[in-house]
Amino acid sequence: METVMEDVEEYTYREVKLPSLIPIVPEPELERETGERRRGRDIVLAIDHGPNSKHAFDWALIHLCRLADTLHLVHAVSDVKNQVVYDLTQVLMEKLAVEAFEVAMVKTVARIVEGEAGKVICKEAERTKPAAVVLGTRGRSLFQSVLQGSVGEYCFHHCKAAPVVIVPGKEAGDASIV
Image 1 (cartoon, rainbow, N blue to C red):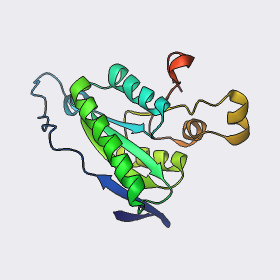
Image 2 (image 1 turned 90 degrees about the horizontal axis):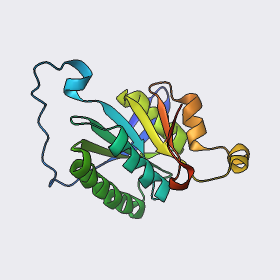
Image 3 (image 1 turned 90 degrees about the vertical axis):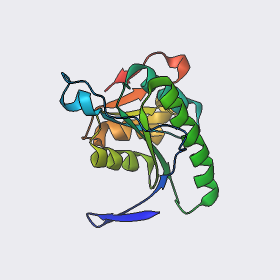
Image 4 (image 1 turned 60 degrees about the vertical axis):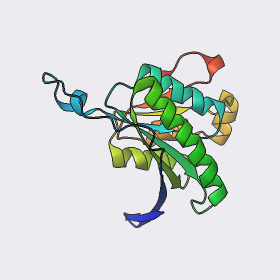
């Protein structure tokens, strides 16, 4: 666990050690490609243990990721010292990392961050300067979201580092880019 002080606000997180069975992907050796395309992009993907999060992950792999990209999996928790939550999330992130490599051949970095989900996602976006921030919906109705607020809505208004892609649940249709 590492604690970082940023502008008087404490920022606590734990890196997740992902399985070593994923080979290290070498830098692409394409002479004519330069810049972002050659070194790959960073994509932040907010995950939890729900089906809409998995759907957003699948959508990002199919529609957004390409060779040499790095997928940053971020999971917000109330306490990073809770070993049970850490272990469950580590298992989930390991499965997603293996799937990301098998499907899109992308490198995956995982981090469990302490704090409110919306704020955590925006902080990670500021830290990594990604090409996009991807997250799923919670599956609430418009009325419930207006009353209770949503992480997607928070990120849409406060995440200035990258475009935010909110992937609706399977029954709602295609993703909207905001």
